[in-house]
Image 1 (cartoon, rainbow, N blue to C red):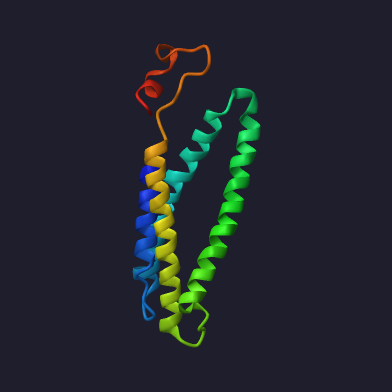
Image 2 (cartoon, helix red, strand yellow):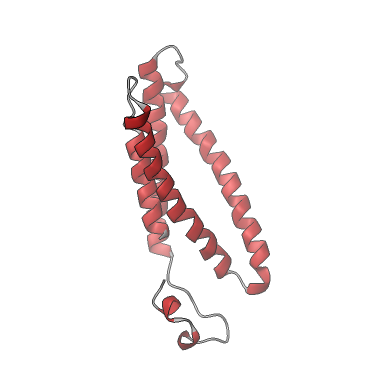
Length: 148
């Protein structure tokens, strides 16, 4: 789910990068935003569950706090980086709609590239659930043994 969600998120960012200066909300923004929102929900919710389930039971609250803090810090750093990228490619030209749109398009491409890189990293590093110490695979529910 995480890999699928990040890939859909990357597609949504790619779709948003196609915005036009004379575009329409209904054609250029809304569909792309819905695709990106679907990708975010498919990626972020399972990643929280993965992070918390990877921690020992007694550290679940700590793991949740660290993940949520990471989301907040990562979002702030990502927004700062994408704002800098957008400004470097014309989004600081408020009187020029073409340059402004080009800057935002570049930022969406950058965000999509990061989401795609995250999908690749997740595909390589995430594995099915591991048994908790003292449990063997046969004691896990069938869905967890199958990787779901």
